[in-house]
Image (cartoon, rainbow, N blue to C red; front, side, top):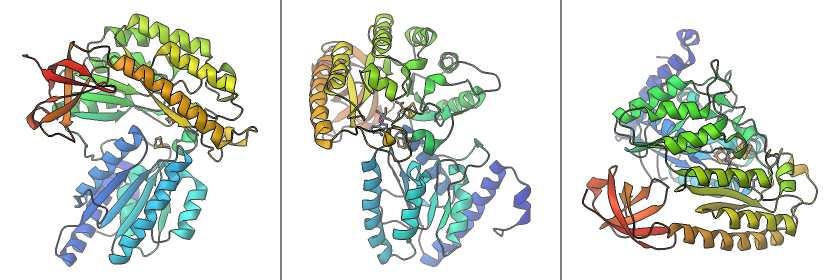
Length: 476
Ligand code: SAH
Ligand code: SF4
Ligand code: F3S
């Protein structure tokens, strides 16, 4: 088989990548013969659930091409799937590239590949070209499914291969993937984002919103369930705007209803909904379904209506509070979690106190708090009144203390009760314990063994320990 075989040109994108998977396998086998051992590959993932799911696809393709997976970066191939949501995500990758360079000096055959959101930034690619030319392959988020082709091209060339171009907005189905967990999985329902929150780089690096066909989603989940998956998480930057770009539009609530009907599936989660698109229909589906977990992640970002407008979030403090109250009323045992940014340009002490006020009113079960990070190309990066780091840091510390106070309170709510727990792993510190999650996402540790992983068991929540429970199994 030759890489420039003309017959490849007439294939569909799907078939073409299948062709390159086979060709890649030949290349890898040849190299393995030369070395007298299997080639190893290490995929390191940064960023969100979307990247984690992408990495499962990349791992699937690598395994199909004959690589053996390893956790160690002293491997024949190292692939970083990067994130660029905040500046420190980028700094980390540059730091680690220095370390990879040292490894490559010891093993000149080592293949280093970079992909993901950070690679969709022009300045980043320029910097890699100039300062990190030992990298073999750079690709982006739009052409992830071309990895077999790009790998073959880079593996057979002596020069760095860079390709971050979108291919006709295609969504390619049916590529291999290797799940991290046997019993749970993320599943993409939409790609990209149309919201352009003024601080956020995601719409620039992930492109416009593209929805997958409901049939494709349902069939993929059915396949996963047949394979032992009991919990799925529907993934998208704004899941509840799902369906608008389809030929036959359906709502996210309707999609949830259809997923709910899949036999054998036990738990359904989703990440991330946007407050502006949270309909009453959606609240009803969550309330009435036995499978949709009673956990809603409702990103606040700021409690000040003025800042929310500058952020282009398209809701006010009052609208948000009304929505949170409605969700709590309809689904009393719901866990509400959130994301908050402090130090957005122009944020005054009063604006910040509005955010603290929302935290006090909503009493989140947990919250991810971030210091605003300026992202090149976004609207907020061009705003005046950028906040001095020491002011942001002080607000961050005060907000965190507040958030933790309520999180502790919320997490003791179910002390003494019995609840169903999906066992996820052996406890990292104490192997006589297992660790699992309640429907509302709270973590529980209790005595158990490895064979329980992936099963749902009833546990008495004996003691709330701040951010988790200690419990014991009760007779089923
Ligand atoms: N689409 C999701 C997740 C986006 S990224 C959503 O809308 O919620 C996850 C979180 O990172 C965001 O919710 C936001 O709180 C934070 N974030 C995004 N851009 C940021 C920036 N420039 N600086 C600091 N935090 C940011
Ligand atoms: Fe970024 Fe806003 Fe889109 Fe979330 S909804 S990915 S914060 S632009
Ligand atoms: Fe990061 Fe990209 Fe996710 S920027 S947060 S990995 S969509």
